[in-house]
Length: 299
Image (cartoon, rainbow, N blue to C red; front, side, top):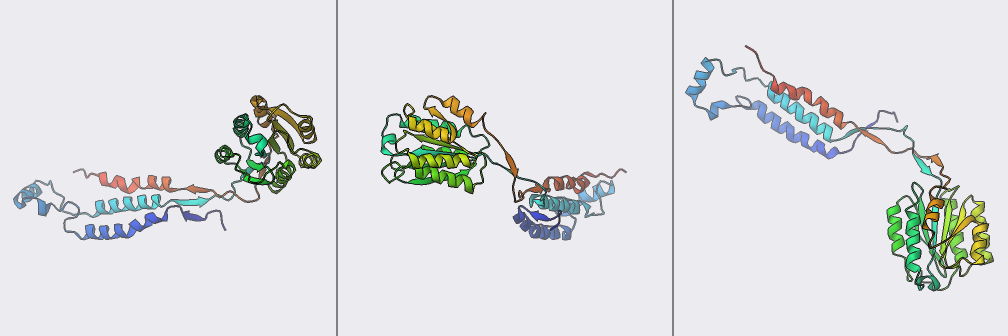
């Protein structure tokens, strides 16, 4: 297809053209044109004004045609003729962040659980242009929200997480970390972050191996600890090339996700669908026939 392909963004406006055609035909076939003062004024008065040269006897149709042309151009402008811009590139951020949230009973029944959710929301607010996703786990893991740039929806989903979100009892962080590694691979994220919010229950050799897998993908596994960080939490963060945060270190988490990010942009494999609306320029052309309505004859 050529670069001059034209489409109509609001084609329903063209339905007004047949109506304008009927109105135009009616106006052009009326005796006396637009004014038709012969029906509204006293005949003797009209004769007197004609004798004084105050009445144009030509009954010109130019004003009607100028008015119709103006309205037609306006309707065409409102229909939204647009040119497709195929050369426009789109980009995506290759740095993604996945929040892996422990919803097991030992976490959700803790008095600091609301503070942990607030920590997660604070982390979401620090993403900037980075896409994010949510994974929840207890005895099993689930994707609460796939990788997306809709941070508002991410925050709303995070606020709804509670003890009933995951029905499976237990704490299996290795399953959640494996799911996070799979999501990073599917999203082609090459410099992402995985933020694990947990009390440390269930961490062991299997989850440690998944931490190493995440690091091998070019991502970082960091842990937000519900309580004082245990040795297991420290070991997992080290294996994942990440860091450990407590619930009081919101600024440190924001700096980790914001200032310390390795932002990379890549051109998309598909072109951005972009249309340039030319309707506003047609409105300028409508001024040409419209100006004829103000034309005066100098005698």
